[in-house]
Image (cartoon, rainbow over all chains, first blue to last red; front, side, top):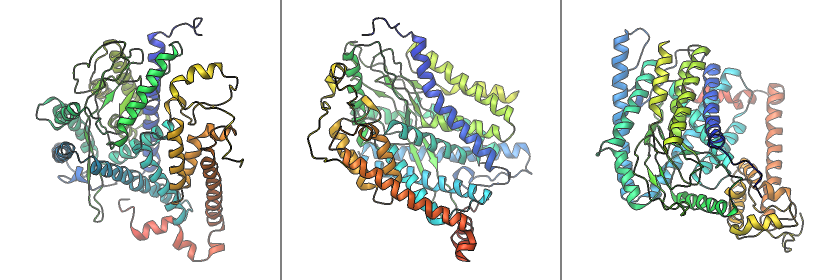
Length: 401
Length: 142
């Protein structure tokens, strides 16, 4: 029925795929910039958290003091992240998936409920919105509960799940921008380095997690943004059926696994090829604030490569080599992007928004260029590629200007 | 609400593998095959039934937004009034529940916001959110 239709070129489908992943990243960044510019008129906000236990930055310290303090903070942060990740690996090894699932749902509820609630409270106080506490509590409870269900259950409306993932990324990124300035920059670099180390070193927790998941042929629990798969009009009905079935199979496998926040993980799939490939995502952790006696908790987010054997059997290609970092290729033609990347990019842009808007624009261009380049390279090489270095390189160049 | 137990006139094929060929030839081309808004990426009909029922029941825990998401997710069921007779009651009741609850909540919120102190007296100050947040010290960092 489609003989008259021009077959889609690589650029057509790739362009659509890129748009489908660039749009939510841009929306997340835009929302964070909006929040920062609206809510941050006062510069003296000090947030006590794990990321600032070693050193609380004040504006009167010298640059070297600030740098050393930020370094100590980042080291403390990375140390806690490592410990929690190892605990997660242990739990995964002991197959305590139920506990992990409950814990992940609980942490999503904390992010959406408490962080979202506090940001809403700041907004209300700033603009003196005459809302009463009953309405506020009901609305917040609804928002958080449906959000937990959306990211928890693998079969919710795609639009709702994507929307909530973007919102979670936005909330965490905004919270990160409240950290002191030097701490933020050094922390980002430290997390990127930790990520590389944890994935590449044979003793790294992420690598252990990957190998565990691969050996058991299980899915790694992670909060991953999954774009809607591109349907090919020019393929026959048989292939569509196969793709659909594989999509559903994958989602069923993931149904009884919990979700974690997924930082620095980039998984891109090539819609044109129906090759079973490797997805990789990265571990990361998220912090809850320590304030007024609230216990601070860390959530370790897991990421690991997955091998999907169940793709279209016509290729006969077996599983690709394990690629442990950066971007990979997913199955069933859906682009997946780790939520950590959302947060990473949004924190960068949000920080830039505290200076002026030209910096925001430059950073946004750098990030989009980095992401686009990585996606293009992924499509051409069909291998996993690290997504962060390109963005970081462009970003630092822009910062120097 | 129509008699929901009557056998359906539309025949949504529960076997998803044949649906593409069947739907192309079907005379009832307005009949949706997939009960969810995601189409082929969504749920099959049997799973949809359990999901719709579960969303509807959870919505009673003061979650009208869940009812709204339920209606959004099963929008083809609402739009085509003769399809999916088993799912439709739950989605309809979710829609009704959402409208009733949101009408109540918004009327209360608007009364509170517009009436203000003139209507409520001193208790308005005790109920309004920014005062409550100040009292409880919820935004201790600002």
